[in-house]
Image 1 (tube, rainbow, N blue to C red):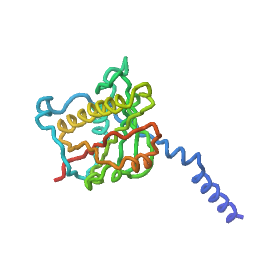
Image 2: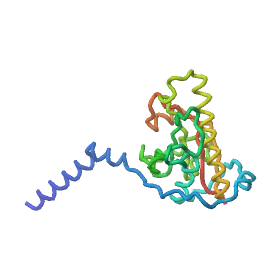
Image 3: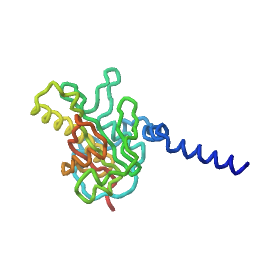
Image 4: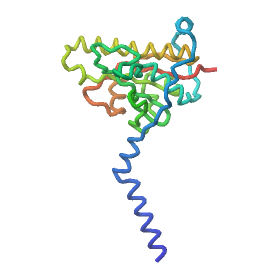
Length: 218
């Protein structure tokens, strides 16, 4: 009798574990980031003096507080009344989403809630670029344009504005990294179709650039 009960419990637990609802719950897990610290760091002129691209990274993990601060600096909300952000956006389209590739999965940054929502529970850092160093950086940011927010524009304007808006965001990351002694480099050498498939992107989403971030390799 006891063996039957134990077997029945095991079957129920197994069924729950593999049930689609359980999988969906796992996939929608999010990380609540600490409130961004908007003070500290090096003065602007010193950060500009030290701003550079680096292609060698330590595998040391970046603390969650620094991740929060960096994402806020990149394109966080600095005027809560209007939801306006730290980076300009053409026509205020706000079409650029920041995906964060870490060892524990791919996340989507939500500036309003200051959270990272799990998109894919897989380490896909190596897919974010064709250079060998990208897999070593603890974080790779992927800038994705939501073309559904630009549907009223001609193609040349879509290409121009999405690239320009990504440039504003990536430069904010550069300045944050220079201010807090992190290494970074923005990259365009990406197998975009392969990465888009791994990220489960829609047809109206377009990968613009990726940016590796980490501590300098010692």
